[in-house]
Length: 420
Image (tube, rainbow, N blue to C red; front, side, top):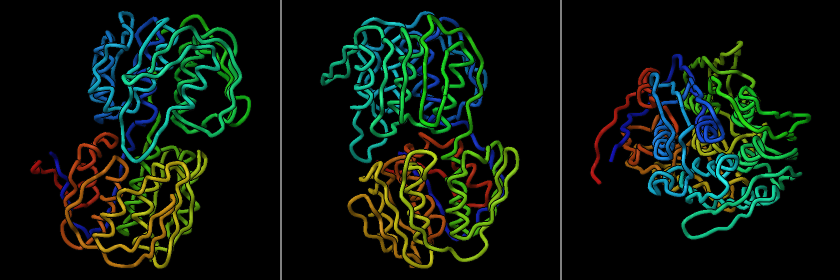
């Protein structure tokens, strides 16, 4: 079991190149099953979730050719239905759920094993199944997974909540389906728009006539294409919060500032000075941290994937902060470790009330999931003494060269082999 070992108290300063988006890469990778020709992807993040997705696609008959650490060529012409894919792989990866939509245009009958991913509470797939049923597909659940039969047909569907995963599966299913599909209250996150841009480059007919509205006119086939995966706004936001917590200065490159625009007023209000360029963001903490009150919401609101890191940052603020997460109200499993470090936090009913200012002390902790692991890292960077974070493998699911990047910014960090 790998551990991340950190000694706190050092400001993080320097430059970070933002890697490709995990949340864009996974649906784009699985969408290759829709294609009749090879595709080339660049700027893929070198993270374990991408490696697992590529292994899963290989088992499904997709020819995977690596062209460097961040590039790959996928030839899906010999692909087979996903029924026989390795449950250990699909069960470790939430993104394997995108096989539901990606296999629609290719296989008349398919069974998709149940997905895995981070465990921070209930993550139902009801909306995924509802939109597929609206397209005329026969969908049934078993203990092993989801069985889908039929070809998607045009439909109109309104999402009662803006779901990234369900929007992605609907777009994938409709891209090579029959007729016109209209989705309203669809997710608008940058990684969803990146998937749409990728599919368009391959001949898909997708338009965005209004915010939250996606119109897909199905086409018979998608042709080969090349695509550069968009930058990861969550990775970028995480490093901005690390710099805020430690009182440093950071410059992000390969980072379109418009993706992070929802964060800027919040960070400025907490005490940051922010400058932007065409694809750069620079942040300097100007003084003591002010408390914050925020609730997560679909893009362009504050993202749930930065909620744990912000809650950890609030422990260093002067005063009381309130952070709510109605998207995933049970996503506060990391709070117990923050308390053991010395933080004063009450977490209940999807909300954390943080009384900031108490000094933190390093200790041994366990990352319960990917983003919670980043939150524990932030706390360790501000704590007195050494911290050890077990289950570093969970953090590697979504952050490329994590320890190397922290070290380059001045952190005292190393990876160690811990006991099981």
